[in-house]
Amino acid sequence: MKAVVTNATVTGCLELGEIADPVADSNEAVIAVTAFSLNRGELRRAEAAPAGTQIGWDLVGVVKTAARDGSGPGEGQRVVGFSRRMQGWAQYVALPTTSFAVIPDGVSDNDAATLPVAGLTALYALERCERLLGSKVLVTGASGGVGYFACQLGRLMGAQVTAQLRRADFADMVRATGVDDVVISPDGAGFEGHGKFRSIIDGVGGQVLAKLLSQLDESGRAILYGVSAGPEATLAVRDLMLTGDGRIEGFYLYRESEIESAAKGLARLLGLLADGRLTTHVPVTGNWQSIGETAARLIGRDFAGKAVLTI
Ligand SMILES: NC(=O)c1ccc[n+]([C@@H]2O[C@H](COP(=O)([O-])OP(=O)(O)OC[C@H]3O[C@@H](n4cnc5c(N)ncnc54)[C@H](OP(=O)(O)O)[C@@H]3O)[C@@H](O)[C@H]2O)c1
Image (cartoon, rainbow, N blue to C red; front, side, top):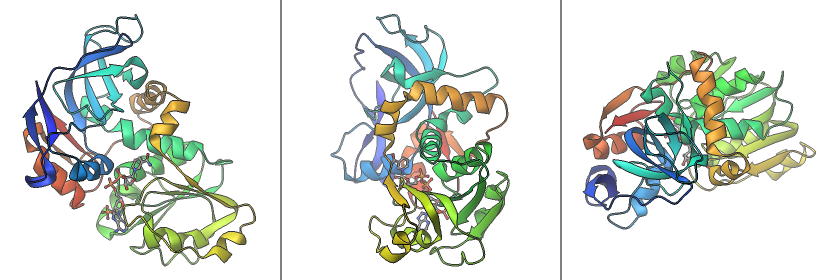
């Protein structure tokens, strides 16, 4: 079968290659993949992977062979899934039935494809926070895949959401999520007058995070899930000390999706999409033959939101 594989010598470090068909364990279904969305994290991993490595977390498709143990959806069901083994961008993938959910009628493949990594990360990062109802939440990198969902889910959970962006070009798209406040700040400065935040959902990291930690409220929590601006930060320890029991917490989707299966988390997000309470932003679509160019565009950040490619 054909699959997306790594090749450091081509644009975006990705191309289509030939690999063996997947072999399913008894708790796994084989899914005929129809589309997938791209995430910054997997593209970064692809850059460093040996040539010929398979890639891809997010996928939608149709169940070709149901799991032998009788779990999960039956053949012909349209599903969205999270491939922990990063084998999702292929004609076929074997997935444990705890890793995918049935897509309700009325939700498009493109919309569903954006959910696994970006939607689940936003959902679980917010659910780590306490007392969201009526409290202030800061979402950094709000124009990104995760940030866009975090803005909406934070509002749905009853928080007062402030979105941090580095570029004014993407402000309208983020405002349309219904956030309470948008701050254009490429370096984390300029938050005077915006108050303190009980929770910070941060995917930017680096010195942007270091600066924004001074905005953490007493007993606040900063959930750190990403490092788009850099993996290191110099902290003003005094600011953190003065929050009392303010906390900085790491976040890793692989661990969170062991606490609640991706199947359950995806079902919750699909319900919100079906009800029209959650929206996606997919400005880039195309055929998977454009995988290299699309990956390069995402890493170069020449669009906001998500890209979805069709097989
Ligand atoms: N820990 C986990 O389990 C987990 C899960 C999901 C994602 N992640 C990580 O989280 C991060 C965000 O993921 P994503 O998929 O949302 O990425 P994305 O779609 O590429 O979005 C990146 C966001 O960060 C902003 N940004 C990028 N470089 C920046 C810089 N130098 N300074 C300030 N802002 C910058 C972008 O702003 P512009 O729109 O202006 O470019 C955009 O808002 C990535 O580092 C990813 O690897 C981790």
